[in-house]
Picture 1 (spheres, rainbow, N blue to C red):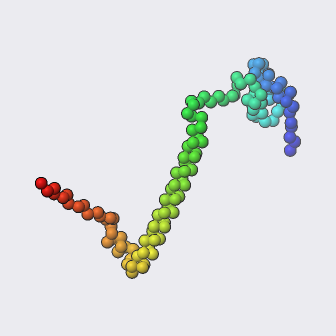
Picture 2: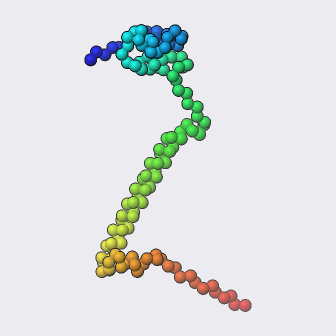
Picture 3: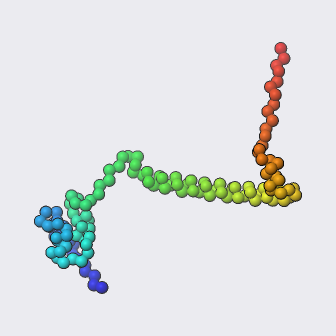
Length: 129
């Protein structure tokens, strides 16, 4: 496969023809018998004055680093989720070991303590008058 390298002067000449309106990018491509379909368009974007094919992104002051900040936040949330999964696995393993030491099945323990912790509320004291 032969690779054709074009000089910068030739590229600028092609870009000039497209930007002056003498020919379209596809016409310049056919005129010089170039094989790549996007070659001239790419040169116009790369070397052109900016009237054709350049993308200009307008951002507000707060939007500039928004994507990077969102990536950092996502990474932190994923790490926190992984930590919580690890803590849950450790708690489950600890509960299983504790049930084995108490000679009680895990299901029986869960039935007995299904409501979680119950805190008895103290009665209000009467003030002496």
